[in-house]
Length: 177
Ligand SMILES: [Zn+2]
Image 1 (cartoon, protein in one colour):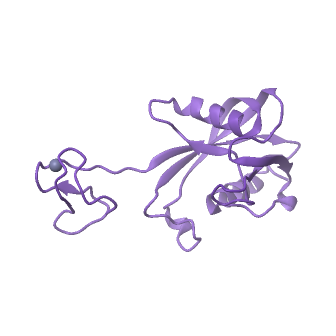
Image 2 (image 1 turned 90 degrees about the horizontal axis):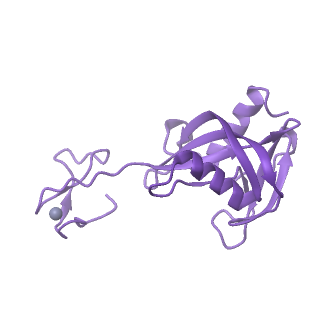
């Protein structure tokens, strides 16, 4: 349980009788149920000649020096598709049209147990879009310091196993050469 106190009244939160961490804690004073849900993230896959656009994470940011597909969090009240185009623009300088959803992953899913990216405490669901470039100039920004297209055989060391999983899937589906 990440939070000991009720955000409504400051009372003590407790787990349910069976101590199940998958269930929300309950306030012992006011009965408020502290629902906790995974957060939503977005990533945009832009392909060109069988290569995918990746970014190198900037010094001073988490996972610095490692590469990933441009991605980020959906903000409160933000449309999920707008979040995808906003994050991509901030990180790569490029404007994209979202063309379709490719796949969806969760960083706490069973397939990631033992990878170091199985995060029971910071759970997120990542929506992977295909995007088509419609404008802008390729330039790294925000938490990225370099952006570049890679073929599958040239892939650099990746920051996240979920990204590795999706890039493998792209190869298996013949999008990435
Ligand atoms: Zn309370």
